[in-house]
Image 1: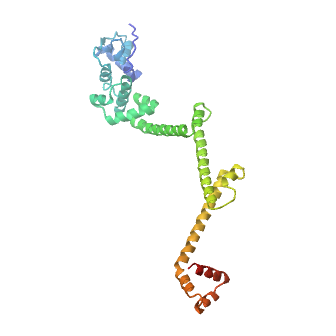
Image 2 (image 1 turned 180 degrees about the vertical axis):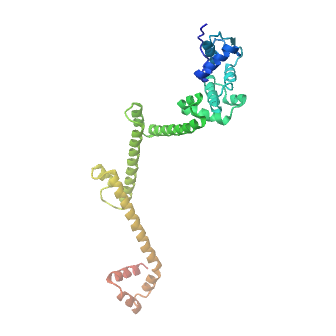
Image 3 (image 1 turned 90 degrees about the vertical axis):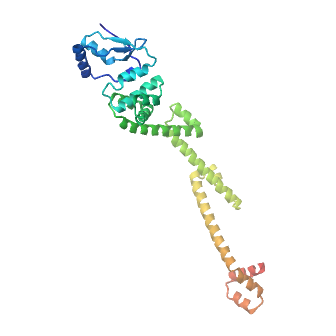
Length: 304
């Protein structure tokens, strides 16, 4: 008799036996009979027994069926499949994640009910969410869960970085984000353009700040920003000149402070000279100075 039955989506997650294993099962059923019935749900879908059904077909034996009458087909699928096969702990964790994704059952409850490791379930969940192709390979046993988990973490980090970059574009350059959506720009090209824009904006801000200081200091030369707008300079060149101006200004301030500090430290000498300005002592001091120094001394003594 030919049987064509649909499989419950949760049961379909469990990998089928290999062809050689099915042949062995078929020989066993042919020789000893079918030990366990194939479990169907109320709609006639296979909950447990896909391999037995395939083996019966190979053996030419009419399969025996039973109908599940409970209210939790997921529990039936897991109990009938999860530990009966030679599946690794990683496969069991991944299969449970996949089954729960279809059924909405709590992972915590399934971990407790079936004695599953919470850490393995957590790792399987990361793989399932961030590297679906690897999740399938873990399910079938092609890739170990630990290996897949390490790769999935890298995929997750890359995805997060891409999302962060795209969010940055939407916030600071929605026009570029729109061009990505339209396929005009790649994300890398859009980020490079945004970086260039923001760098130029930073240069402009710095140059205009330097121009404001120059103007406040009494400099009447054309502003650097004006030279850029006239096409005489680029913003990068203007930024370099602004840096040079600020460095020179700071150096001049430093030297002026040093000079004034020196005057402050010798102010007592000026006061003494002013008090005895008409004495031979004062004349001897002034006569020994250069004309510039003598003029400065005379100016300073008038301030005392």
